[in-house]
Amino acid sequence: PPTTPRAREGTRYMLFLITFLASAYGSDICGSDTGFSGAEQAVVCYTGNFLTKMLTELDAGNNKTAEHVRVHLLPYLGGSETLEALVKDDPSDPTCKVCYMDNSTYTGLSGLRNSLPAEQISAYDSVNVCYARLTDSIMASLPKSPCGVWLRAIAMDPYDQVVAMMKKIFAASSSASLCPST
Image (cartoon, rainbow, N blue to C red; front, side, top):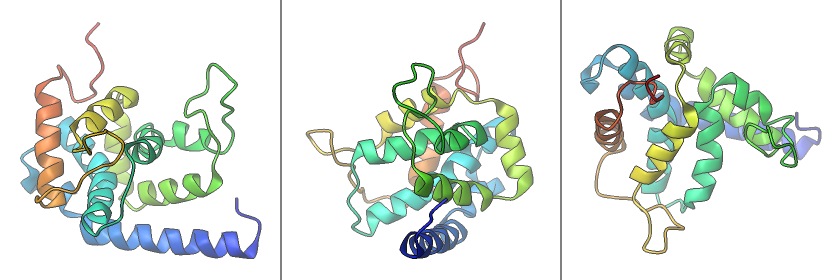
């Protein structure tokens, strides 16, 4: 947890911003009008909570590298286990989950996760998503600059962009979890 007054103030601002953006832009993606149901809807809701926020920021002119988004998306999609790893993981450990430590990122992403109702978090967690595969699929679907470093905003509403992206991802997978069949 942040220990300096400035760090605590920054964390409070980040939580406020995340909560505001999640409530303003993340709610529709969890509605019944997405065209998804069951496990797919659980994944779309949880994933969309992050993606609609990020895409809205991108559309507002906030430049983001693909790597910046990836290192935040992976621990978010991994749920509580990977979020908790953000406060203890060591990149020299070959079994690390996220392979870096960042208390501020832990606080922000946990706040974003907890901005969803408990039943939606539970629905997502029960799918047991192969979060690394989902992260890779999402990152491959996001528009990037010609050099691949920067994410690009496109002329599409974030909600519509997430729905289209997830339809494509699910069409290429045998299950909503994106885990290989055994």
